[in-house]
Amino acid sequence: MTIAVYPGSFDPLTNGHLDVATRAARLFEKLIIGVYATPEKKLLFTTEERVALARQSTVHLPNVEVEAFNGLIVDFAKKMNAQTLVRGLRINADFENEFDMAMMNRRLYPELELVCLMATAEYQFVSSSLLKEIAKLGGNIDEFVPKPVAVALKKKFPLALKVK
Ligand code: ADP
Image (cartoon, rainbow, N blue to C red; front, side):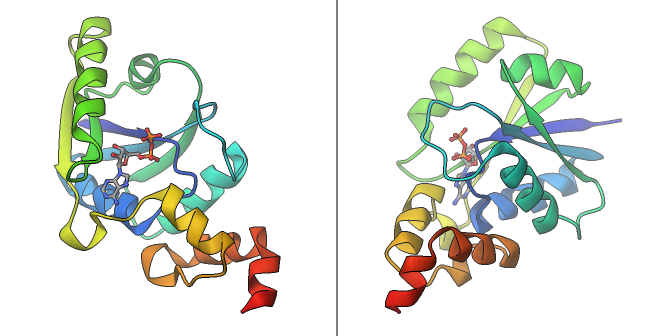
């Protein structure tokens, strides 16, 4: 069975992430979205919330699963019996980081192949961090995130709602 892991913070999952997951789900028999529990970033959502939002946003994709993980991506991929790692690439934002990480991951686990999917044009500028900032300031983020995420973001920033 071809199994791929798509790891990230997903804080929260955006339509850009969903687009990559949808396309990757067509390439592999099983796609596991790996929600990194403890990234070096300040998180808005707990691990449980990020997993739940990713699950709710991908219920329509039967071969997609969502799991939280800690530690090295390569160890998570091994545990899941995945042969491939999936990442999304946005213009400017991602290439250098992804390249460094890919070189390191190859050293750690040479058998794991990396597949990068180019971000779709309309999602090139969509990032979780930017959307959190817009939501915090009371802006409308509905067109950039799945419905459950839009609801969750509005709940996190009730004050922004009052200003509207
Ligand atoms: P990380 O903390 O690992 O960067 P993210 O949740 O920010 O995790 O992103 C997970 C993956 O999705 C990364 O490969 C990232 O480049 C990719 N990604 C993020 N936003 C988009 C987008 N709008 N379109 C396509 N890929 C994206």
